[in-house]
Length: 316
Ligand code: 5GP
Ligand code: MN
Image (cartoon, rainbow, N blue to C red; front, side, top):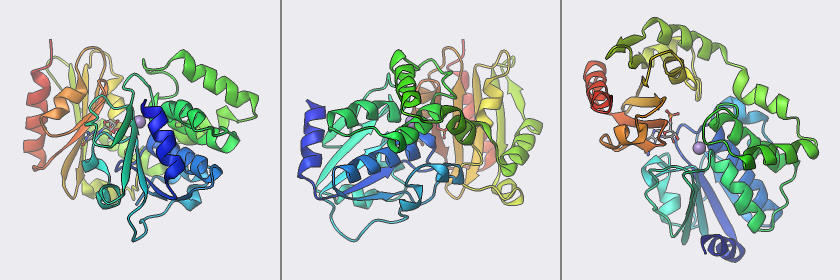
């Protein structure tokens, strides 16, 4: 069984590297920090490598131990968390590929099963929730610090416990954290509720530019590198922008294009029936049924036309 293999490989490994997806969100950072502390608890020599992460998550235990780059060695074991394919390992695939054994723990339906051992559960609302099972099977005590990191991942990936993937285990876990003294309300506020000024400025821009297509079933908006510069936006400041369109009456698919050095990064959200991950698959992207993304390496007008045309084919 994969869980037994994971336990065994972790027991064997002396040095371990933990990696996650580019543009890391709360689940990416939270699950990575939880795994990092769990491996430390087991006495492992472990590096958590995340080149850039939103400042919001600096409040989490051990966030100051995140490294921007790995060591110049072939690690005994690499663990990828919350990552659907190796292309998304933030240009740091080398540490992954060159490690002796590879594990992936994830909840994306589009996961390509790229590791030696893949523990993937698309029904889980967050990778952090899967880690409750994995860490327990490893014999790790989920203490307050580890619990806070897992909680941050669950809160952010479930939009504050409101998405359909939330299960009884989600609330049972939160109850267990309350019992050991975790301040759930405070973590919720810090990782989800409080917005940065740059995020607020970007919100005004995307609202102003929002357009609707197909009788209002598609909402479309965008931000450019110039906007990012002018608002002094940093990693993570675009989080939540795509949800503005999603939450409007009649919208089935919300599209946000965000300019990057590699082209336009599309973020999609759907409400009832469009499989956003499938929409993005044609552009070599993926994700979940209701939240997915891809990169479209074209100028704005062409990228916009391509993604809207693709979404149209999924509408009823
Ligand atoms: P977001 O729109 O918040 O960036 O991403 C939504 C979901 O889609 C996340 O679970 C994210 O990991 C996934 N996702 C975003 N972009 C890509 C991509 O280019 N490829 C794949 N495979 N998944 C993506
Ligand atoms: Mn996730």
